[in-house]
Every structure is written in C-alpha cells, then in structure tokens.
Length: 254
Image (tube, rainbow, N blue to C red):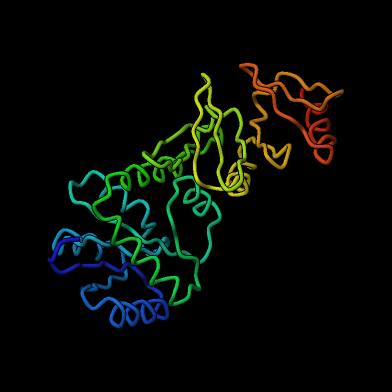
C-alpha cells in the first residue's frame, strides 16, 4: 500500500451495521478515511469523486444489488478490493466460495471485520484478485449449474477452471489434487471437505474419504473390487460406506 490516505467506501443501509463498521475503522484503522453511502446511486457518484481503494459493500440495497453496480466498475482501470457483507442469499454465498472470495455473514464480530479489512488492504494491488471478481460475476449471472467456474489457488499461480473440466478431486492430507480432462493435475492447499461442500450440488459425489468424482464422467463401476472407471481411464476407489449410494445413482440413470 502507498503512503497516500486510504479511502474506503461503505455501502450499507442498516444503521446497526454502519455503527459497528464506523467504530471499528475509527479505532483500528485510523489511516482509513471512511465514506458511508446508503444507496447505489450515492455510491456511484462518490466512487468516481473520491476514488476509493477499498469497498465495503452490503449485497442488497434499496435501489438494487451491489453486485450489479460492482460489475460496472470491473472495467475501470483503478485497482480496489472488496469486502462483501450479507445477512442471507445462499445463492450469493455459493458464488463467493466458487470464486475463492471472502464475505462477512451478518451478524459478524468485530474481530471478523478486522481480519477482513487487513486481508482486503493487502489485495488492493493483487492482479489475481480481479480474476476472482470476474469469476464471481460470471457465476452470479450463470443459471446453468454445469457452466460454473471455480478458482483454484496454487503455490505459484491462480487458475480459473470450468467445473465441466474436472473429472475428480483427490485428497492428500490437507491438500487436494484436481484431475482434469486431458490428464492435467492441479494441487491446492485446501482440504477436500471444502470442495465437497461446494461441488456436491454441481454434479459431484464423495465416493471415498479421499475422492470426489464428477458423476457425469462415470463410464463403469466394477462391483467386485469397488472401482469406478471414469472417462480417460481414471480409476477411483469407492468405499464400502458409499457403495450403496453409487449403485443407487447408477440404477436411476435414464
């Protein structure tokens, strides 16, 4: 971050949330100049006048969704980072997870807000952050489950992957390896449990403690040795606990 004053635009219409945020910023982030707006129309004019580098946005405002306004700003040359807050909207929460973006679920604690602000300040000049925002916009405006994209953060790069390109996810302690079409493998430092929660409603099934498979790509199931054969010849073991679930799925295919 530069030595220039940090301008933060708060877009929020809930008085209780405004009170908490204003007090936390004042006490813990004295270098931040906070400007509070209660509508998207007000925020739009403030953004171009004050050029904030940090946006703290409630999702649902009286005059629309902050997502839609933020999409307008995505073509802007300025760099900024965003902290989203929401009291509901499971659909939006799912989009955040696929985009590897954080959000604060109301009511949030003072400590949660402090952590979020510190992280956001570090991401202002991160080029990868804009990629994550674009993935969020894409997923929010994509109705078809199969068209979703997911952000994978690896040691040396960030990749945006179509979920349709994922054959399976393999666990290795606290790491997960994504098996993609064409034989490519990508390893991320995230437990498979997190991806199980994200992908289970998008055509994936946890068939083993260490494996999550894309059901669309099952070619056959060898019942004698409990092995699933996916397209491209990928072999995946099925645990005894999950065998009945796999058989039930296959038997109901039309």
